[in-house]
Amino acid sequence: MSGTRRTCEIIMVTNFLSNLINSFKRSMKVNYIIALVQNISPKLVLTNVANSTDFHIVSKALENTKIKFLAIQAADLTGS
Image 1 (tube, rainbow, N blue to C red):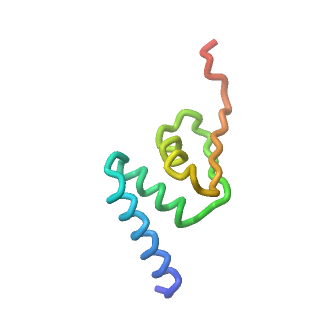
Image 2 (spheres, helix red, strand yellow; image 1 turned 45 degrees about the vertical axis):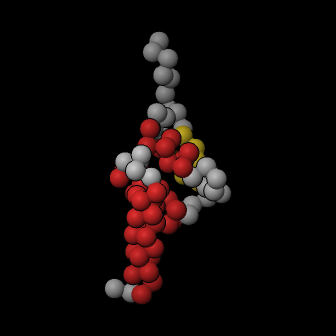
């Protein structure tokens, strides 16, 4: 295992544990996604699931960062 990969894994675990300890109100899955997004540090996160609760929670948890979140609705949800 390379040193860079090992360092990345340690940072990822540290971010995950920090999120887990600081917020028991979120699920383990959401805490993992938050740690993953923080570790990757993208400029933009996209989803095509317009009503994803997890996406909403992650976007709100990271709203004070430079990471932008965008949900694309591909269908008419009016029911008509």
